[in-house]
Length: 251
Image (cartoon, rainbow, N blue to C red; front, side):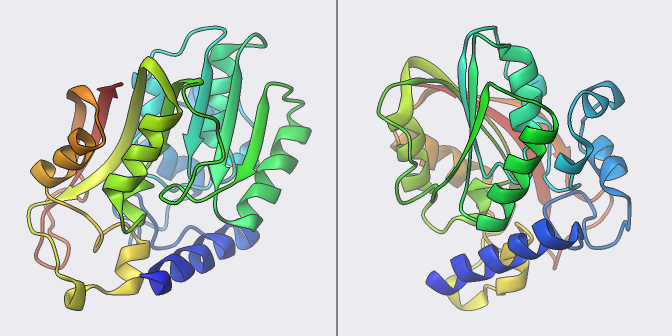
């Protein structure tokens, strides 16, 4: 599946350089033509939140707004997976305040560079961005994180169970994972996968039952769906129903 990972890096590296979020993980992503800030509002971000962070961190990608459901508190340590230009990192940093810390993880060098520049421009002192691979070793020590978030990122990896095991490893006992992602009513087999559609968070989607089972296999408990919405209202994507969920799980 290395070709999928290479395609994902290529796609999101291009977004970092150009700001063009065409055909990415967002409701109606390939057809809306919305400006990034409008796209962000469409998936649940408020105008107030978007005004509180660096504008260049808003790329209009994702399928939900997990920070709304994470109940972040001052002093907590947060890790955001697939942090992109930093939108959820900066929103989290505002909530955990200077006594807390937020680390963004992304496997795309261009995104890391863009996020670090956004942090410098916004004068954030409680954030850090690290390059890393979600499913093959998140660069964080064991048992040190209070909250892990991600926004339509686990869908892009090929070994989702291993990605959840990595999340489980870095969380403290009692720590929580709050993520947005896409599910489908019909999974595709390997020979049916289109690499471009995988990069758009479609062809890598699991069924609701399979996705939650992957979380359980990683060791999590108290798994709950906090929000659910149709990905493209009134439409099916290549004959499949695609739904956006916000899921919370406890270590």
